[in-house]
Amino acid sequence: MADRLHSAALHLLRRLRLEDDVLGVSPPRLSALSVVVYAGPLAIGALAVAEGVAAPTMTRLVDGLEHDGFVRRRRDPADARGVLVEATPAGKRILTRGRPASRP
View: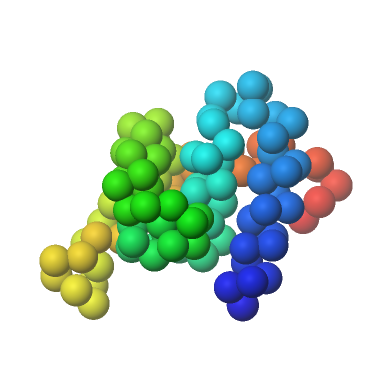
């Protein structure tokens, strides 16, 4: 499942790179956002592993995505000390904005 998800995220990212200037979101942020949209909500550590970056790097990416209104942090119901990152409606829309209208 993780390999299929990663492959789908990479495919989506390639398509979105053509729209980066129009969307105004950097490729690393789009990549992280795609994982959150399709596999989230996730802990920052799990998101960092999925993206192959260190947790502090992912924290900075999530900070930027949160500032832009594309993700939000919420308490992990399974761990009172934990935080999950989930996509907002705006975050989901930004990923579909570059998708051709003929795709579902």
